[in-house]
Length: 411
Image (tube, rainbow, N blue to C red; front, top):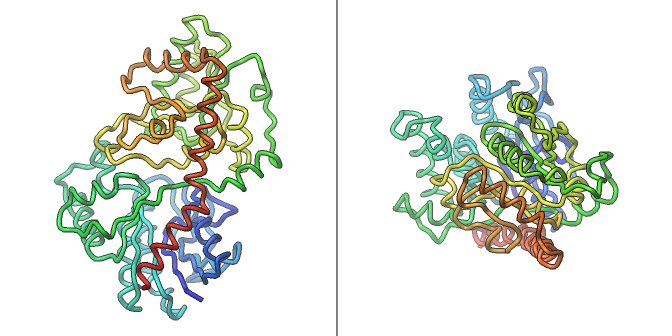
């Protein structure tokens, strides 16, 4: 039995948190006969949950045939100094705790932050086993592109140095974005044959099960007399929802009273945006608040059009995108409208929706109205294409790719 250790600071278990990628991979690998351990932090990101509130160094729980080892880390809120301490806690302590669990055959680590990679590299070197390093977000490029960090600042230079070190020394590199190989090539001096593309995805069987078993009570969802544009997820600066709301003001002013935006989610910008909509008499935008993850599939299944909205940042998205919600949108089988200009555009590839390249509020409003007026035959074609796209990102297929990568480094 091959032993796989997943080193992921944010390796949320299946019943809490929002990051499901590695919980699903771990479950699928265990079902295929692998012995899988997940080394993760005791804190669950974006929640108040901390599984360890004393001096216990680690805690073991079992989920879906996978042993989760929760490493004691300090609680935190937001992105301040306490979160940095949390990262350092995890980096130092996961290396110590891992020594108590013998040996594995392969280490599979995942960003976003670079200290997770470094901890995994140290463990892999000690055990003399292969290291597969995965990139889900480009750090520090994301911060630089969004203006949160200067390219030549000391923190950025340190992070770039760690990044290149890992890319040179890991046995395989997994990227969730389609253009990962382009990014690695731009750095120079790294073996491109090591680069693999395994995007985020969807467990279609579980998604469809949730549609049937977890119906969400909402009068607006059940209405047949409105055209429902649905957004799900966090409401923050990076989601760029203010521009979308401005587009809905244009739609309202043009007399389309039966087109409504239903926003399911929470975040720092939710209350300010609610106030903004009230102050500007924007009546076709309804904020529904946070909902449990299990209800999202049903909510999306009742949409007429699904909204993908991210802050305008072409420099960052030149390598493609991999937002989790995109694959939920595919599985829901409804068209998608996006304001995210990017290379490797999956909406374009699968003809499952439209990206509005000319990013003005007027153009985006026109794009929504265009879907509203689509002939049924054309609309249904978008729906069919979305469902076809979801099959290419089903986690059974993605696990095949991960297993192939594991076997490559073990051969």
